[in-house]
Image (cartoon, rainbow, N blue to C red; front, top):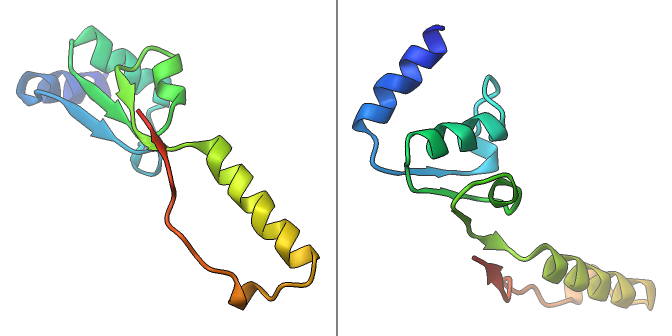
Length: 97
């Protein structure tokens, strides 16, 4: 009850919501936050694609398939004898919106 009142007060002053999985409250689930933004017609952006699949407006973050592919490339080089310290590091190549 108190939590609902708190969110109701927040919704009166909020114009949008930006959240990351690391910042999600341990009290509220991702689904509850998405439900809150939908009910209050708040534009929302999330850090992972799962929120969009359950009704969130949009998400932006690294493409997991690209990360796995790059990790496999590094692992292959290491298993073939390359020293991890000698391998180049790079920034992610793509993000998904």
